[in-house]
Image (cartoon, rainbow, N blue to C red; front, top):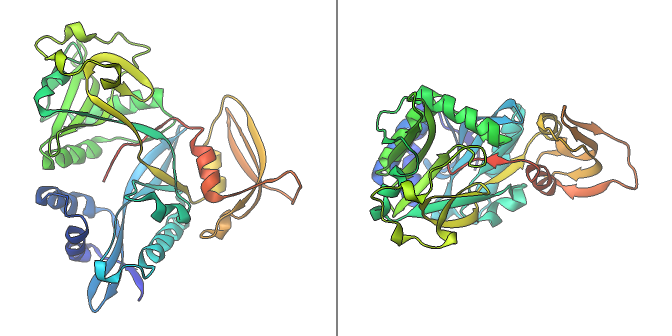
Length: 358
């Protein structure tokens, strides 16, 4: 069995395996995915008897990490035909994709695992906890009371949304996906494929000041809430919700959260989950991107069983001007860890906003 990447004209051939392994995705969503996301992604496959029996999709994104932009890939649609499982195909594909990511100069990759046990041996670790919010369909009107000037937008200006999002995210987070007009044009199509859309809040000048996407396939699920920092701005309380029915949510645990922040604007079902996993592919370059108001310095002995370029003893130093990972001589006080533990250590230093994506 050999691995290869599909050409653009061959990508549709992987749809049979996608629909076999992800039956929960609607036909409408799969149509969207193959029409939109497969225009610029990479699909690594293993074939048998002329059929694709295992695959990994790598979807490109641009991130900002402490003010530095970087190209990365989000790993999705990792799947193997049931008749060909337990042969190591997924691991073979993932190892090659990781090597290719590093060879392109990418500093990390990330994914949302169906089962973390598959990815932990590959060096992935959960990088932060994320709040997930859901409200019943009948409470949809609660969203409309969140801000003084809420509007449902089926034709919101993608460029204006991108400018708003990058301004808010840069103020509140260290690591996040950069938004542009194309990002919002695509994500709006994704939400429409799941019977959803976007709410946008405006100030008096009709400039967007916040947004949240939603899907209605299973209940009413809120996605990608990009909202002003409630510690810095006056947010309307529940008395400003007008006709919304507030009796359906009446406990502290049901209030909306944004990161670690809570407000009283509307009620949802809230749960805190470990959602995304990350994996460093180029240790020295990743450390160079980091910033820290409180200086950090340590000597570490790193082991990476997949990307040997990351192996060795490093003197790690991070301050508010940047980071350095310099190779060092063997010493007794070097703390030994694998690349996954190191990734966890570094990601835990960051405020991260990376929601469920495709």
